[in-house]
Length: 219
Image (tube, rainbow, N blue to C red):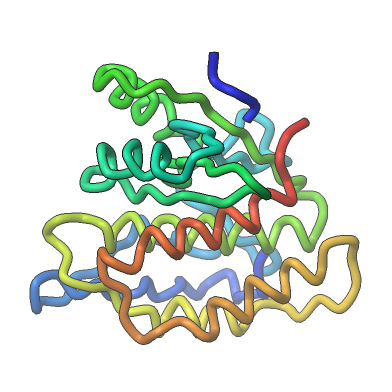
């Protein structure tokens, strides 16, 4: 078996302008990246991430856990083209992860990998949306995963990050909370993104999201 291994107040009548995606030179609106803000003090994603509306859930899919980096690289090379996979160094071990997913996609990924004879296991991360800090973190991660998924598509040349960076920058400033340092780190990372992200950039950004999610891993 596999080793163990809310947003800034936006007026209710204003819809968030979705980041425009540059697809092979043309620009298209991707309304699924971030949905509209329907309440003055709540950001709602267009996909329910958990049956419990007070909880947001994300997953990674682990495809190996190795002491030998060469073995990890072999697995990575076998899945790298189809998935935004990366290797995370965990002390003296190496985790191969196929990407970061919302709950509505993870079972399909696991099925595809197993059909390709890749042993894998889901790792779950949960956020308490009643906590303002955790809610902002989960909402930013949600939007960024969607943006990265689009950038990883074969028919997309690159994706412009300006709107997403601006939206994140306008979120409510929170100065206190158990994990406010994690939130501030995430916001700073988003603000320092390049103006455009291409497919080649996605695995490294997925790894960064994973380092954020590790603080919310289910025990």
